[in-house]
Image (cartoon, rainbow, N blue to C red; front, side, top):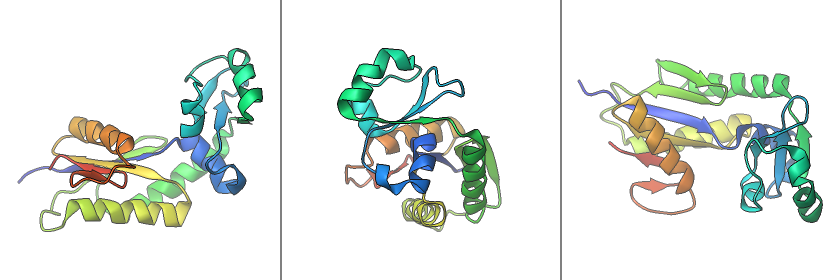
Length: 174
């Protein structure tokens, strides 16, 4: 029997959590700071495009923050933990074998799903997570966990590109 794994990963997770509760910051540059507000620990795609670097001390990017009206949040770890629990609960509906890998990542075993179109199944997972939690996710599918992680990275990079192997935040190596 061939093994198949899906890695579901929250997109810009801490920022996405903040956006669930403040929709006015959708499509705007957003950063989340460490618990002492010293360093950037999460960035929206819009903030990344402006040159905000992960781990950068906030004082080094104050000019960019003011110039581009970047929304700044202090980390809210209780909120992120709650949202993670909601995401994992939603994901558990799609596989009897779920392994939480980090606050915003989980491996789902897709063994026994050989008769399903895994790409469409992953799209259904993405839709359901977004509908039930408000969180956008990307999914990589492959025969090993390592390759599923690589596939997920490709899915994140190609989510805006429509192609047979990669579209809509999903990439399959299978």
